[in-house]
Length: 85
Picture 1 (cartoon, rainbow, N blue to C red):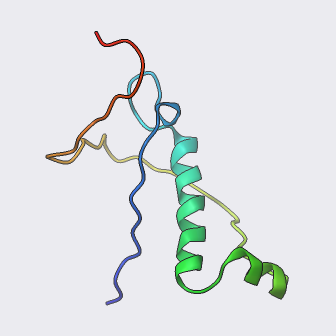
Picture 2: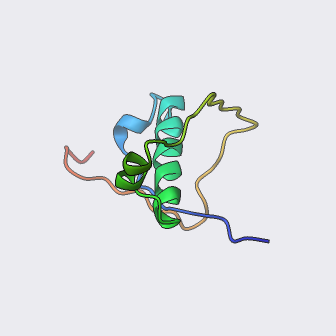
Picture 3: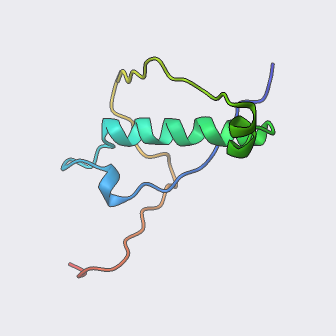
């Protein structure tokens, strides 16, 4: 079985809704970024797609939530700037 491609991201304030949940559009933006990072890891960077005059085409993106995800044990949250309360 092949090793899954993974990449770690930091979630910013703008990625979250009022309840602290990641917004749908933030998930989809990260999916697009991971897609291109995967291609880069396989030797297909943007200049190569441009040279070959083709690239990935996404026909549909869909997000389905089964339950709320909790932060993994030991996860740290960082706060930068702003007033401390």
